[in-house]
Image: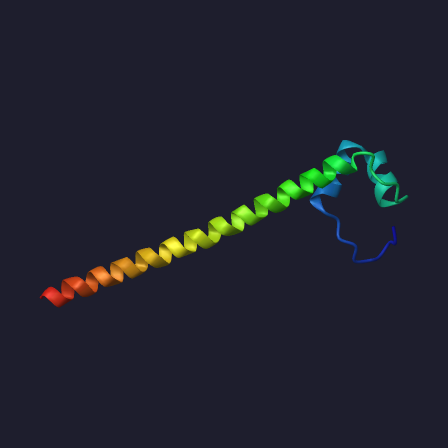
Length: 83
């Protein structure tokens, strides 16, 4: 792996280093691929799917708040119209 001054160290790398410094060194410095690539790919896929669900939940939450605000606005208009 090419070393650069602004290389980003990810949390997963720190976790890997804490778990096994040698495994981290083999992958990050020597470029030896992990023997657990299939499991890692499955984990990355699960994280992507979770991320999509979180984004959808945020969008739906914002939509719910907007609809609530609209309902309150319409309720106020309806009350003022009756006076």
